[in-house]
Image 1 (cartoon, helix red, strand yellow):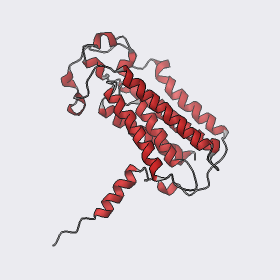
Image 2 (tube, one colour):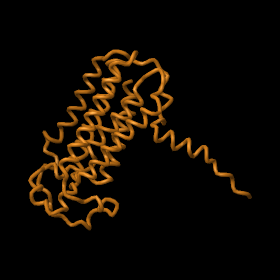
Image 3 (cartoon, one colour):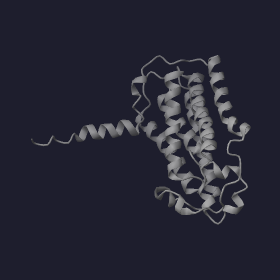
Image 4 (tube, one colour):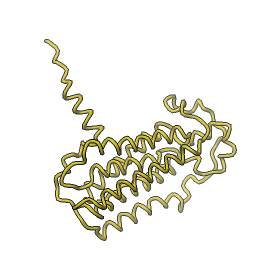
Length: 238
């Protein structure tokens, strides 16, 4: 039997759909909700509650078991990212998240037919990504890269040194990017804007690794959490 020809065009189209966050493309074309509802406030409050739960309960709120720790205990695909923290790069990643949120909010707030409901969806998506990420970080209690460096003794007193997985910055950035693409609107977002927000979100993840605050697997988990948060809120609430 002769082998089937490789469907190059289908492969390219599949990659494009994935990178463009189009798996939920069928959700577009619906009549968007234009007002903020009381339930939006409750959902936002729920996200805030999930965020504070690990702090109120003191989940894994104790010093790390080692400082410095043995690098051989880090998986090979993460080991290369061990480095001392770079505060400037960390600040850049935080600034990029805030810039992405501000630009998307401004665009949605002035878009006809979207207004504040679109902003509410964006905020809820980012809020649940942040809240769920904070809870997962406390439960997992994965050590940050700094605990494998000579700076480990100084970092051992900071409980955040055991809050590496998943990356909260990346989760929020991808929730903002996916939320902006999936926000209810009559027509899909132009391709250029889809790529721009995806690139910005990916840049946040790269900066978190370069800053020495996260491992690559932390960033990958954060990206998945952010997209899942935006998709779930889109289906359940909007």
